[in-house]
Image (cartoon, rainbow, N blue to C red):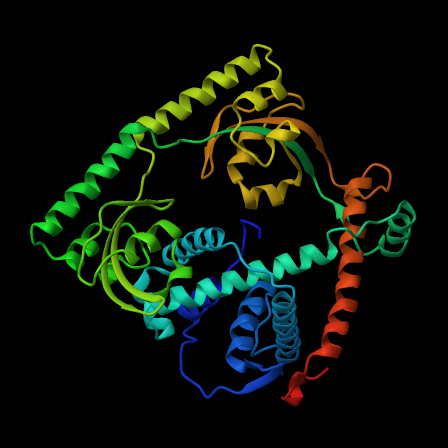
Length: 434
């Protein structure tokens, strides 16, 4: 599952808040897949987001909006079919990765929507329930991705297939816009011992205050750094053990109701846990989380390190050797720090700091050190090219990727049709039928 996993719920929430689409209405069953159902509300929420992204006004362009709704319904049906296949193939999600994605997702949603209370008001459900719902969605996305990856990982395209794809689709694949080919060295600010000690001392002091009689929920609201539960006094509600990170679950299960844990460290930071109740495999806990964040000293150290690397590069050090020695981007350091070729506008949307840093840099040279949300970078401009048409020889790798993706999509459609022949699928509403 890709780290850039997208949240339909996030965009739907934003849309609801901006457009007042939170009124209640009677739901309808739109489709049945095996023993599962798809409700009109599921289709409508996703369709409104897609329409917004496409610049389609549902009121002014009802026919276009209906086509969007049909597409959304087909995507939902496909997802349910793939989950059925995942069950058959006994494909399970990695709980640690799901938990990590969930926390990132919740932080992003809370920040963009404007707080937990606004989410709860809009959806009409407590944050603990939204957390469980969102976790299930992320787990489903993960399993669907694994099903597709296993099925199509070995698909290849021959040279003839690439050439035929290019001849057939040359007029429809568009042109290459202005592009830059870049590599980088990344240095991140990592929490040092002083940052860890600060966080540990903070959680230690809070635990002492609780043991001395101060109210757990009040302290959680004031100090907990878990955006999903702080406003609820740290309450996570009843959840199964599998939805919690291992260290947290093991510590909580050793407690008796009302008992306070020792300090528990997870990949999220330091926790104090209070067990409220046990019901079989489900537990109800409240907690206080203190995260371990880089402090100012850590930021300064990272900034100094990237400056030193830049100086060495300017003085003639080999870029790829410097990447191997210093870069902390595991996804690129085996490729000499190569990030790839990007359209300038695409790069501006992804990391506008990169575009500004590369201004006036000549191919083969380096940018000044810059800071982004990912850390500190030195960029190398490998090449820059103006807008032009695709050329099958010059752009072979890109066209080959397009041809491969096209072939996978065609195979995917055939495979879905095969699954549909084995699973009961019914679209109940006439307006959604093609």
